[in-house]
Length: 126
Image (cartoon, rainbow, N blue to C red; front, side, top):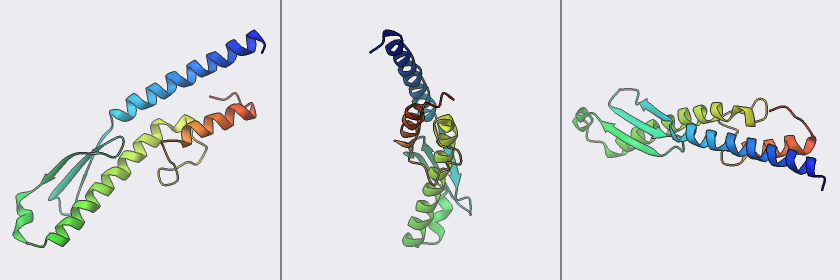
């Protein structure tokens, strides 16, 4: 392999690795909070969709319906996760195909597969 080509590939690898570290760091810092429609439940999730905090207003106990309460909690957490994923997609946007959305993107692999496809095709846009 030509030494200059090897150095160029290594430089590209270093740039991509630095970008991945930056995406990881920024994604780890994501904190998104969603509230239930009635404002009695609040859920905060991180960049990976992990539940960080759940807040329940004591007024939720006035109507003892555990099934309904569980559904509202679940819906609130899902909403927070969706918002978190939108932020993460925005952070990884340069490594996603045009038109990628939070609903259609697997953030674990899509940015890197898109970058590999870009490199294989010889597209030198970042």
